[in-house]
Length: 195
Image (tube, rainbow, N blue to C red):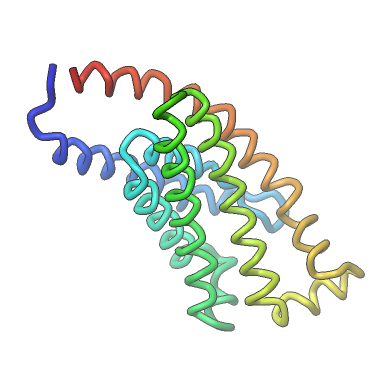
């Protein structure tokens, strides 16, 4: 069955994915191990980018970033320190974490859809964590340095051990395992609907 209004369907699907992202972002901020919240939100962000397109991935990432910016207690002291840097670290970082994997999927899937799905699933959490670490170390280095020094670590090692190891591994493994599994039936359905 050929879709009569593909644009309306994309908007509706983006809204559904945005609701999932918002719920996971908001309630995920309450699920913490130590001071770090576990972000399962990359799954629908990457999945939406794969299924709908790069602009949707960026939009879904932006929803994630805005939710963190306005609701996560960890962002509040950073906003007080520098709201613009915090915006970059939350919103722009998350938008890139949605846009870049979707763009890579789009390029790779022309030749191999499964490889494109796997690459997008791997790249999403990497972009999310690397850009976050960059923002925390470069933009907020003066803010975090006393805390790192009190723990007897360099700023880089402090952040790597704080989120780089545990949070990244959980986010990475869940996204890499779950996203390709969910993407395959969605992409098969999309192909049937486009016939």
